[in-house]
Every structure is written in structure tokens, then in C-alpha cells.
Length: 83
Image (tube, rainbow, N blue to C red; front, side, top):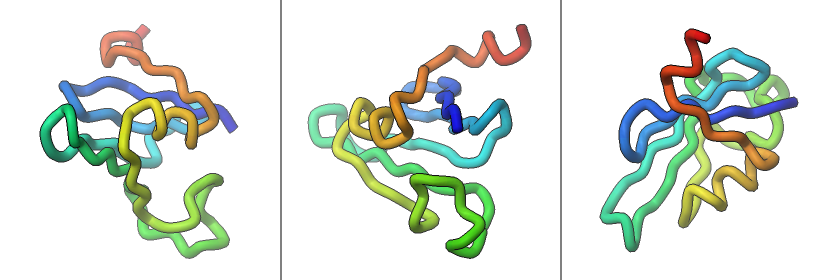
């Protein structure tokens, strides 16, 4: 499974799995003490959630931590989606 983050605005990303949007990643709070939350867009039952999602929502202390959790997800600007 290959995850990609598409930057929408500062602190806001779509999470794509094999080219399809499956979740969002949003920063809450100030940059120095921000919480990053990855949330699946669909309320899938546990057995249907894509790995590593074991819950509908997961929190992180940094963007780098979230990227690592998603298997080293690449970050692309929104403009690259249409190319």
C-alpha cells in the first residue's frame, strides 16, 4: 500500500491510498505544540480499514510522525494531482 499526502492548505492534507482519497490529516493548535490528526473519511468497520488504521482517528505530535506512521508517505502539492 502506497500512501501519499496532498497538501491542500497550511496544516491540511488529503491522504491518498493508491491514488484514492481515504482520509484527511489536519494540524490543530500552534506550530510549536500542534496535534496532527489523521481521520478516515468513511466509518469503516475495523476489518475493512486500511492498515495502519486501527481506529477511525489517530493523533500525532508532528507531521513527520504521521508520515512515518503512513509508511513514509510522500508529500505532494495539490497542483500535482491534475498532472
